[in-house]
Every structure is written in C-alpha cells, then in structure tokens.
Figure 1 (cartoon, helix red, strand yellow):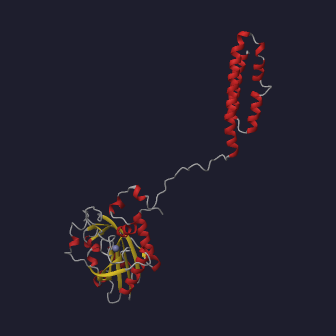
Figure 2: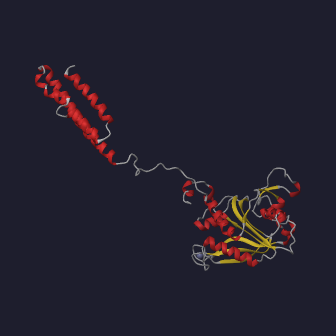
Figure 3: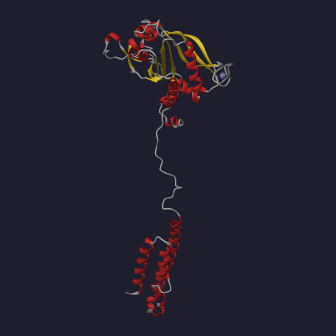
Length: 346
Ligand SMILES: [Zn+2]
C-alpha cells in the first residue's frame, strides 16, 4: 500500500470512528489515535523526506488536508459531545406538540350555569322532544285555537302524518313549555323541574333573532307554592347569574299558560336602572317570563286546580349569554367560527 492509499484509508476510518463517538473520553482516545505523535498520519508526514521526490508533493498535500479535516471534525465533535454530556437526552424547554382539545360551546356553558342555579334548590333536569304535538305545544298550555302564534309564519309545522292524530299535527316546538305538560302527565306534585332545550320559530336571521335558539324552562308545583316562592327563587337565580347586587323588577305581562304573569327585568349594571348609553337609556333589561300556572293547564293534565298551585318560567339562553359576554349579535353562536368559540375557555 502506498502512502496515498494509506491516507485515504485513514480518512475512512476516522470518519466512521468520529460518527460513533459519544463521550469526551472516547473523543480524546480518537484524537490520540488519529492525530497523536505516534499516529499513522504523523508517521506518514514524518516519512515524507524518504519518499521518492515525484510522490513527495502529492502525499504532503493530502496528508495536510487530512490533518485539517481531522482537527475540524474533532473540534465540531467536541462541542456536540460536551453539550450532550451536560443536557438530558430530552430537551424539556422545547415547545411541546399541541394536542387540540375541545371545549363546551358558550351556549352549553351558559345552560349549565343556569341549571346549576336551580339544582341546589331541588330542581330536577328534564328534557323533551323537539318535534312536538300541537296539543302539547299549544292546547294543553291554554293557547287558544285562533292564537296568532299558531299561524304558519310563527310555527314550523312538520309535513308528516301525526302518529297520534288526536294530539294534532306535528310541529317543531316553539318553546320548551310542552315539557311541563309531559312532566305533569306522568308525575304527581310536589315537583320541581328545569327543562333546557332547543326551540324553533320561523324568524329571519338577524342580530337578535334566529330560527333556532335555546330556552331553559322551569316548573314548580306543590299544594301551596305561591308567587312569593316564584319571586324568591328567580331573584336568587338572577343574583347567582349576574352578581349579588343585581336588582330585579317584576312587570305585569300576559301569557296564556300563567295567571298572573310577569316579565322579569334586571337593572343595567352600569346605571342601576336610571338609564345610560350601555342600556340604550332603558335602565332595565328583559330577562325572562314567568307566572303562576293557569288553572286550565292543571285541568289539561288532570290536576285539581283547587288542590295545587305552581309557578313556571322560561328564559332565553342566548339572551343571557349575550348579556354575560356583552355580545350584540346572536348569529355569532351558530357560525362555528373558531376565532369566536375559542374565546370561551373552561
Ligand atoms: Zn344603563
């Protein structure tokens, strides 16, 4: 083997050896082996004067190139081996791989918040069908046959034969109140229920209307449940939802299925009822409807209206969520825009 071949072989050996080195000690052994005073490279360079003159220049040039190559490799390897011996095998400071985690929709969060105001007071959560009989959506709730809400432009009628024609046509329920009827048909008082769910009305989509929205309905019936109970329960709930200092106001209203009936308002948190720009000078914000269950509703489910009394209420979840989060457009809830939805952590 001549000197040039020997240098080529040395380069190949060194490249392989440096590739596997893992500790500073091993590296030092490699330095001695390839660059030390007794290394083959040193011997080759030292033997240059004995070489035939025509080989001397080429071997000298290659030998020095190899020496530079080895020194550079050694320096580079020294850095990585030093870093490797100090740092742990895993770099915990690197950003992790983010796993996308879902979260509850803001409407679901507000629904849960509303329900959790009632459950400590003994209210049970009940759900009912979204496709409902006319009898439950209207008749049993004392809504007269000629009431405008029964017109096609106020209710979605389902174009399918009713499985129980005696209960009328099928509709997409326009409120959660029919679940009150279903509960009372199957249970005797005392009862306390809250009913969350979707309701449907053929309203064109605009910042404050949607053809589908959510309600939480409630019903309490017992022998002597009074309007004072109604006020006590709802005031407590509104204070839990909007803060302990929330002012409430009960305003006379009309609903077919309750008598007397009221709308419940809360005072604008900014002006406490006097009117300001936040509340559009109104001072009060409408939150829900309520009242004492109408005797005709009790009769429709076979209760004796002289033996039991009760109250019912219903509130729009979107409306409450919009007040909580200071939103002005109901459509944001249904557009599924992650930039919006991701702002509601929890
Ligand atoms: Zn105000």
